[in-house]
Image 1 (cartoon, rainbow, N blue to C red):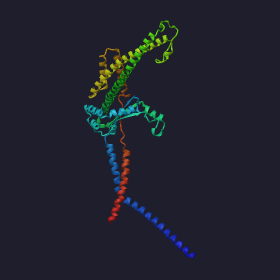
Image 2 (image 1 turned 60 degrees about the horizontal axis):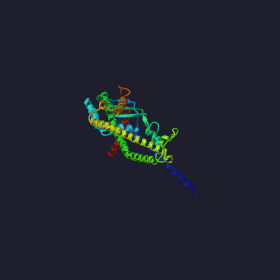
Image 3 (image 1 turned 120 degrees about the vertical axis):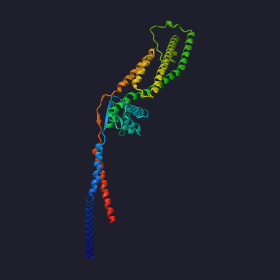
Image 4 (image 1 turned 135 degrees about the vertical axis):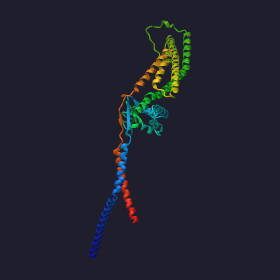
Length: 398
C-alpha cells in the first residue's frame, strides 16, 4: 500500500513538472510571437512613429517665432491692488480702447486677437502682468494655520511690476508693445482716479453729515451752559475778579466736577465751557464750509473725468486740465487742495514710467524637442497597438 502511494505521488509530481515546463515553453513561444509580429510590422511602426514626429518638428521649426517685450515698473502693490489692476486692464471697456488705438497704428491683426479673446486667460497669453517678489514667496497659505501669517500675506507688497506683451514676428511687436504701454501708463490710472474721486466725495458727505448731526447737540449744550451761567450770576456769587491769581483750575468734566467748587469758581468754569463750545461751533461751521468747497471741487473733477473717459483720454491731459482749473480759484484753501492733488497726479505719472525705456525683444521658446518627444512616444504606442490589432484581424480572416 505504501509503495502504491509513493508511485502515485511520483506520477503527480512528474505531471506537475511537465505542465510547468509546458507553460514555460508556451510563454517563451508567445514572447517570440510578439517579437515576430513587431518585426513583421516594423515598417509600419517606423513610418507611423517617425513621420508624425518629423511633421511636428518641421512645422514647429518653420512656424513664425513668438517674441516678448517686457516693461518693468517700480510699483508697490498688495494683492488686492494687483487684482484690481488686472480686472481694470482686462475689462471690456479698456480692451476696446486698446484695440482701437492698435487699429489707428495699423496693427489690425493684434487688435483682432484682443477683441476675439474669449476669456481673460486668452488675454493673458497676449498681455500679462507679474508681481515680484510674489506674495506667497515666503509663506504658503495652504501650509499655515497661523492667522498672523495669513494677514502678512494679505498685507505683503510686491516691489516690482512686470508687463509682458507677446506677439508674432509679423505683428510688429515693438510698435504693439508701445501702444500697450501707453494704455497702461496713461489710461489705466484714470480708472483709479475716477474711483478715488468717488471715494473722496462719499467721505466728504459723511463728514458733513457728522457735523450736521452734531450741530443740534452743540447748540443745545451751549444754550444750557449760558442759562446755567446766568443763574449762577444771579445767585449773588462773589466777584470773579477777586479770585486768587495764583490758582489754576482745570475742568476736564464739563458736567459734574465744577459743582463741588465754590460759586465763584463755578461761574469761571461755566464761562470756560461756554467759550469752548462756541469755539467748537465756530470750527464746525468753518469745516462744514470747507468740506462743501472740497465737495464741489471733487464733484466737478469727477464729472469731467467721467465724460472725458468715454474717449481716449490720458493722464497727461487730465494733468493739464487740473492746471487750467487751478487758475479759476482765488481762495487759498481751494488752491492749496488743488496744488496737493496735482502733486499726487505728478507722482503717479512718475511711478508709471518703466525702469528701462527700450527693453530688448526676447524670442519665446517653441518647445520643439519636448513636443516632438511627446508625439514620438504617442505615435510609437499607437503604432504598436495597431500592429497587433492588424495581426489579429489577419489571423481571424485566415
